[in-house]
Image (cartoon, rainbow, N blue to C red; front, side, top):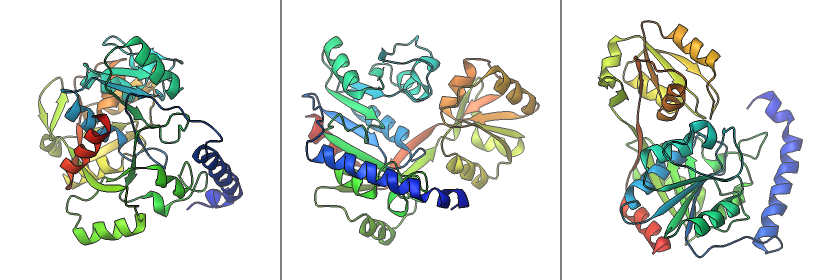
Length: 336
């Protein structure tokens, strides 16, 4: 922990107290939460960024979109607009944010909505679109004005919430006690060979209630890269590579490339970064005689400004170490 974070501890203690009181007011009904008749599922976290929510959202949508009319609702981080927007196939990434844009591109048949006010977002979507059967809300765990039917909290294996502290000394958005509101806790980005003994040790630290379920997932990267021409990840072992990322945590991708013995230069931007012409010029300058590898959401944001023939993105999926059917059953209980 840096010296600056330690010095900010008094602010963290005040923030801790504020969040504790806020949660207590909501828990006791002093501040009201809005509940809707149509099921709402929140996929969130206790900490800021990089826990792996988006791959899990993609998993849920992929498994249920053929049988249900789904609406996905996000705040729309990083967009240059405000208010309520219902996306269509022509909506620009700058208007709704990178993650909603990606969801709409990959799942065109579902409704994708952005709204800072989640209650307004759900209400307006229901009023203006018939037949919605359930909502998936991105990063709404702390948005307590909306009472969700199912709260899924995602926490990273190598940086779990129970070993952290509230902002700004730590990375938690609220005290650890907030986990009690979650019905499902997903330990994400686990080693593929995580054993039962290790899992039980983690579960002991979580101390789930009888009503809480704990699942373990890992990340799988696609070996076939997407771009103008076909490319396999192993083709990169004999190439010069420029890795371009604008995500909260790129360490897993870096580790994956290193394990594949791929050498790369890393051009790193902040999460939800909106690329400028100057950024594109920098990418162009650094990528001479190199292959550009990036994430799917960065790929589309860069393409919005300039097309690179030598640019590919590496796809990512979530994989349950076990209990996938049980996880799906928990979703079905809520939406049926």
